[in-house]
Image (cartoon, rainbow, N blue to C red; front, side):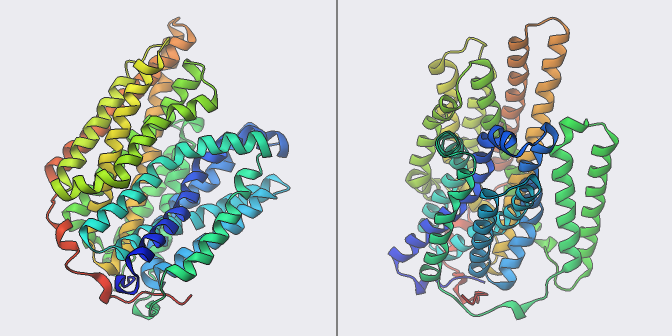
Amino acid sequence: MTTDPLLLDHRRRWLALILLCLGVLMIVLDTTIVNVALPSIRADLAFSETSLVWVVNAYMLTFGGFLLLGGRLGDLYGHRRLFIAGIVGFTLASLACGVAPTQVVLIAARAVQGVAGAVVSAVALSLIMNLFTEAGERAKAMGVYGFVCASGGSIGVLLGGLLTGTLGWRAVFLVNLPIGVAVVALCLRLLPAGVSAAQRAKLDWAGAGSITLSLMLAVYAVVNGNAAGWASAQTLGLLGLAVALFVAFVLVETKVAVPLMPLTLFKRRNVATANVVGVLWAAAMFAWFFLSALYMQLVLGYSPWQVGLGFLPANLIMAVFSLGLSARIVMRWGLRGPLAVGLWLAAAGLALFARAPVQGDFVVDVLTGMLLLGLGGGIAFNPVLLAAMSDVDAADSGLASGVVNTAFMMGGALGLAVLASGAAARTAGLQAAGVPPVDALNQGYQLAFVLGAAFAALAGGLGAAFLRTGRLASSSSSSPATQPEGEAA
C-alpha cells in the first residue's frame, strides 16, 4: 500500500509532508504539554495524588498498546484513511478532554486520545516513506519528521506553561481543535486516494488481541513500577502476564496464514538492528529530557519557563541538522557512520550531565551537554528511522512504522523506569547515610545520566557493528508506487 509519488508534484508532496508532521506534532506535544497542567487539573476536578496519574497513564497505556495494530490496520485498509480517522478521533477526544466535567470523562477521553495518537504515529511514517521514494528527498523528509518527534516534547513544556498560565488547563486540549480540523481538511486535498486494499488480507484478530494486551500490561507495569515496587507481586505478575501474552502472540504468528506481524521482518538486519538501537536510544533520550529537566528545576532551582528555554539550544541544533544537514550527511556517508557518531556525541553529552554539581553553572554544566545532545540527536535520529524502514516492502511499511514507534515507546518507558528507580534508590541510600537532600538528589541524577550515557554508547556501537548502508540508495530505484493504497476519502 502506498501513495503514488507521480500523482503529486514536488511542491504538493512537500506541503503534504508539512501536513503529516503537523498531525504528528499534535500527538508528540500531548505527551508533555499535559504534564505542566496537572496541578491545575488536580485542583479543578478534585483529583487525588493516586488518581491524577491516570490522566497520564490512560494515554500511555492505549498509545503504547495500539501502535502495532494501528500500523497494520494502515497496511490493510489504507494509510491515508487511517491517518485521517486518527486525526478525527484525536481531535474529538481533545474536545472531550477540554470540556470534561468529571475525572472519569477526562480519563476516558485521554484513553481515546492514546488510541487515536497511536494510529496517527504508526501510519504517518509509512505515508512519508511512500511519498518520497527518491533517496535524497526521502532523507530530507525523514529529517523533518525526526525533528518534529525529537523536539516536540520540549516545545510542549513551553506551550503547556504558556497556555495553562494564560488560558487555563483546558486550553492545552482545546488548542488541538483548530489544528485537527485544518489537518483533516488539507489531507483530503493533498493526500491522494487510491484503490482500496482491504480485500487483500484479513486482520489477524488473535495476534492483534494478544500483542495489544501484552503491550498495555507491560506499559502499565512500568509506569506504576515505582509506586507499586519493582519486586511487588503486582509488578512481577503484570510483567509475567505480558511476557506470556507475547509468547502467545509469537506462537499465533507462526501458525496463521496472514500474520499481523510476519516474523521474517526481523530477519532483515537493518530492521532488527534499528529497533534494538531505537530501544537503547529512547532510554538514553528519555533520561536526558526528563532527568535534566528535574536537575534544572529541583537542584538548580529553575522555573518551568527557564527549563523550557534551557532545552532551546539543543532544539535549535536539532532543527538545523534535521531540516537539512542530516540528509546531506546520510547521502554522503550512509546510515552506519552518522548513526554511530551521533549516538556517541549524545553519550558524551549525557556524561557531562553526570558530573554536573549542585551549584551548577548554566553555560558550563547545562549548555555544553545540551549542545552535544542536540548535535548527536540531530545527526542520529534520521539514520535510525531510515534504517528501520529502508529494508521493508511497501506492503509492510505501516507495520514497520508501528514496530519502530513501539520500540521507541517501550524503550523510553522501560529505560526511564530503570534509570529513575536507580536514581531514587541512590538518593534514598545517601539520605539515609546523612548526605544533605539536594546533594543526595543530585548524585541520584548523576547515576541515571551515567547509565543513560552507557545506553547511548552501546546503541552507537551496535549500529556501527551491524547496520548495513547499501539499501538507502537502492530504495529509490524500486518505487513502491505499484502497490495499491487502501483509501476511500
